[in-house]
Length: 227
Image (cartoon, rainbow, N blue to C red; front, side):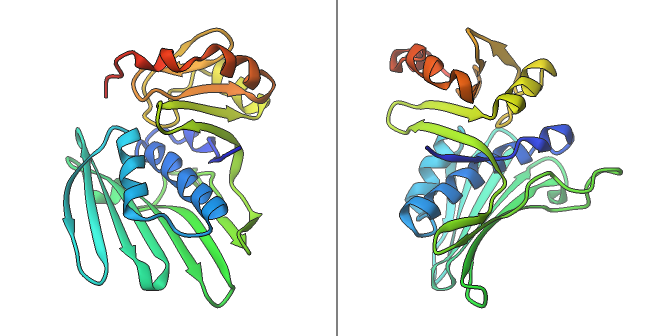
């Protein structure tokens, strides 16, 4: 079982870049819980490839930064190993960088806790008090505060990506015809689940997970995915 963050941010339709940050924050939090360390650059690069990004540059020193690009969206991943800090920023190329979103993963020595938070780069739209995502807080690598609503079933090698939501959250997603939580493309209704043909994620409720998993075979992911 793997954890993914809240999808409440879908109600903030203007915050497009939150979509990528949700998947990345979920994978970072999962890495901390399972492997008990902040992800290394190789892990982040694999995660970026899963979202359709390619690496376009790097800055190496005592601390180092990697840069990724997909169409008009850029992502930078800043690593500070000595201080157990990873800061990922998702930002547009053709708009003000202030409309981007940051993911901060850091060990707080004073509290003896790891924290993973999603932070907007600017003020939220009028009437919106937050992006609906509380920070993940770990003590002894156990979550004492969690923003997660469900689980992710991942198969990195075969690109099998199933996001399992609580039934009520999945029902809300299906009824209101929201777009894909990761890339905001249109979702198609399949046999009891929702599928994004752009980024490849499948969405299902908890009660249908076993059935959907048995129907979505590895061969189904051999189709061409357009990014």
